[in-house]
Structure formats: C-alpha cells, structure tokens
Amino acid sequence: MKITCERSYLANALAVAGRAVSSRNTLPILSNILLETEDDRIKLTATDLDTAIRGVIPAGVAENGAVAVPAGVLTDVVSKLADAPVTLEMQDGKVTVRSGKSDYTILSLPAEDFPVVPEVPEGTDIELPQATLKEMLRHTTFAASKEETRSILMGVLFEARGQNLTLVATDTHRLAWKQTQLGSEVTTPVSAIVPARPLVELERLLADTVEETVHVRFGNSQVQFETADVTLVSRVLDGQFPNYEKVIPKAAERKIVFDRAEFLSAVRRAFIVAKQNSEKAIFTTKGDLLEITAESPEVGRAYEEVPISMDGDNITIAFNARYLMDVLNILNSENISIELSGALNPGILRASDQSDFLYVVMPMQA
Image 1 (cartoon, rainbow, N blue to C red):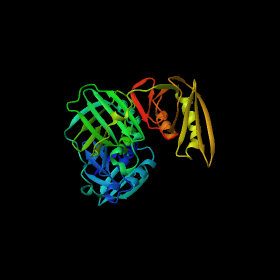
Image 2: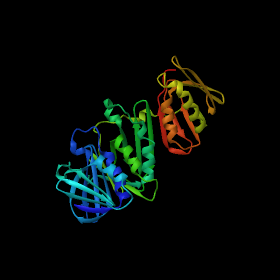
Image 3: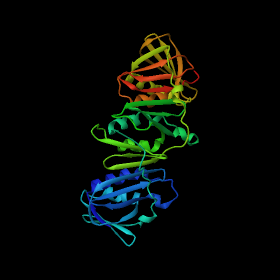
Image 4: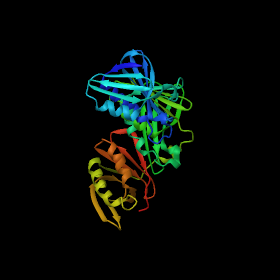
C-alpha cells in the first residue's frame, strides 16, 4: 500500500475513527486503526467490538493495500507534522510516514488480524438532518445511567412510529424525552435501545447544519448511522426499556416559571454546599419568590432567592441540584417552567419554546 493525502484530512479522520478505540481492551489488535485503499480514497476503521467508526478521505493511491497501525502512535505523529501532504507506505510489516523532511517508521499488523467490522445491510431506514439528530442526542444522552449494573438504562431508546422519532433516556432518578417529525413515515415501527457511549461520540461527529443529512438503519442487533464521510455502527442492547410513559405525570397542580440563566446561577452557587450532602437542595415557593437552600454539617448553609411567576399553591420540595444543572446547561430557552403536584411527586421541566422536549426529575426527601 502507498498513498498520499492532505495532513489535515488524515489527522481529522484519525481523530474521528480513534474514538472507537478502547483503552481497556485486552486484544492488542483493537488498539489499531485499519487503513484500506478504495479507488481514490482511504478508509480508516476502528472498533472495540461493540462500536465501530469508519471515516473516508480522498487520497492519491499509488498502490492498493490494507494494514492495521497502532492508533495512538499514528495519530500522535500525524497531528504533530507540518501542514503538508503525507505519504503512507507499507513494507515488510512496517508503515513509513513521510511529510516534508519528517520520516517515521511504525510497526504494523496484518489487516487480516483486524476483526471484521459489521455492516447493517438491511433493516428499517430513516433519514433526518444532522443538526436535528445532534440536538436530540444532546438533550437525552446525559440522562442515561452510568452504572454498569443497570446495563439496559445505559442506553437511549429510539422509537420511530409513523412520522415521529422519539428518543428517551433515564437512570430512574430523572428522564429526558425528545421528539421530532420525520420527512416521511417509517416502513416498520422501530423500538431499539442504543448504548449512550457511542451516541455521545456520534453527537460530536454530526454537523450543525440541516442541509447535511444522516442515514440511520436499524437492524436486528445493530444500528448504523451514516453521513457522507463517516459511518458509525453500534450494537443494540437486548432487553426491555422501562415504560417511560407511566413515569411522565399527566397533570400538575402548580406551574412555576423562571428565568433559566438566573435560576441556573443560583443553583450552581447552592450546589457548593449541596454537593456535600447528597447534592440535595430544597426549593420553597413564597408567592413570586423561590427560595433555594442547601445545608451540610461539613460546610454550612446556602440561601438563594429567584423571582418566579406561579400558578397554584406554595410548595416545599427537594431535588438533586446536579440533575437540574445538567438539563439547564443544555437548554437555550430564556424561560423554563417546572410543573409540580406534591412534595413527593416527580416534577416536569419544560422549555417555553420547545414543545418537543420534557425532563422528569424525581424529588428527594426534604
């Protein structure tokens, strides 16, 4: 194999594919990136056996071939080269990297040793703007569980029915729900749980424009996300996602509206104390004011006031302050509302200008 390509293209493709390389894996071949020529392009593939990412960049191909190269070493070398064309040549189990006066030789492994990267040749297909899916992932993946003992909750539920695509994530303490309308109806209803970790990587890869689209194909045990130059394939989690519709309250006795930025700043300050006591903050409404308090035997006491408008009676309720900060950090709306029924009932947080998003948070013992 012998190819020449632009350094910036190669560095970016290595960074993208490298996100699928697992540092915890015990199989040496999985710390490598597979390089393959294809017409006037080069494909770069990495996998941890659960997730695979493939990038494609243009290249001048003098000699076809394939080779597995240590991801960390090749990425470090290419990222630090001068911005000039890079030539990669494979010979005798080694890959030579040349650019300008720089010349590196890296030990490689046969392409045949690299695991076969799965494809999703058939399934249910949907297509939507990259910016739309990117926003949906940003609004949901953060709420997925981080505890490996709850593997099914470490995923995000994808539901596609009719012309609606819905994403849901929960760790049982909070739940994020986001929906969008597709350009056409799905041929077969979809219900698939995709691990949150590759979805976080996918969010980074997607563009912020609605002109560029992403093609999603749901197979029996895998899902494939494909853009013009990047493909991500992930396994689908096997199991039953909780009945999230039962968790979402159908009605509320009171509605509190507040300025997002002002409320977030107050909660952040109270969190300094709250984080020392199970991250608990207590919220008390008094007419057009919301009092926020937090106490810790080790630190002391925090008190904040935020102006609000409210329909309904006053209430005192406790929430995990971090769960509120997590969602407020990703929202851009000026005004936010939270709907409450009682001190022991979950609250629903909504953005004033986003009817397609809601966030359910469970209360703590006040």
